[in-house]
Image 1: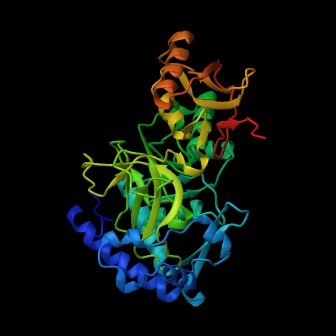
Image 2 (image 1 turned 90 degrees about the vertical axis):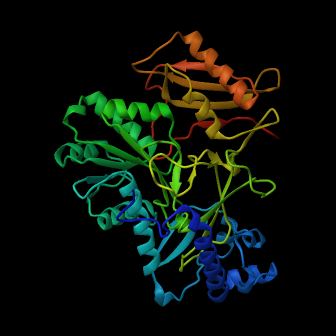
Length: 431
């Protein structure tokens, strides 16, 4: 299926041996070239010669964003400065940015991974790819653009925001692919609908990244923009950037590039592997990254591993979409709730739009209260308000084992954002 940017292995059965060789190289490279890793591995009593099987991965110590902050700015650097050609950075948990270094080979590997995403999405050299994500220190804009150029399609690097400019270029340049956050995609769709521009577009595909998207959001984009194909792209700055995995046309999980990194999905509390289909934290180990290799990096992102072969024909493994973050867990009446669970409940309810808010506060009786504020659908399948409320309440109760109240709002009531939309507001005081 992937002819221009194929996996580095011929079949799935070859993956373990390939990953073992990459793991051995990474541990040796990190030990020999990174003072941070040498100290961390030595303290754990592990050296490069101790990695003889993939099971030895579990003997290696974890690293976190706190380690990047403590060693700011070049905590994970494992190459001479003369061999580094770029840095990227993202926001950190302590106010200091997470700075990652790249060699020429790292940039090439990243572009090839990302170009593989474009190929999996069915792009051709005739496509015109309008890029509406951030540029600068972030990995997003330049990642989308350079991979587009590597792939051979026409890049239209507009950057984020500015709906007037976005719609002008979509019409004037006849862009066929639009790359953005889910919130930006929704804003664009609603603007196109409001101005009656749908028939003037040549848009065929949307590639979404950096934010969870709901089924209602995707349905709105398909309807208002007249497209069928929407893809979800994944990636962290620490793991190169966006382009390390993509959903396929089957919309049944995200294929991740296991020939470039090992993905573990672990229980956030015990740090033991969870069974396929169970929610856990994504932990990354790179296989060939030179400038800033990762060894068991705890991303805090939550997902599930998915079993079985995908009908699309790509044999590389899959994980579910990102369901939230382990450090964003909400404790409500003694129950751990992840933001992605709310999305999943609302996915199944007809008659509501894509936007919602979850408000947590203390009720008059002193108990914690949960209010779900959700917009009615603009058009299409509708049902009585009482039925909508009943389905939401029952869905929350069944999935999260807690009770809630529901407020239905008119379409367009809740705020929109060009970036990541905040949907959960915890107003409780725990003093």
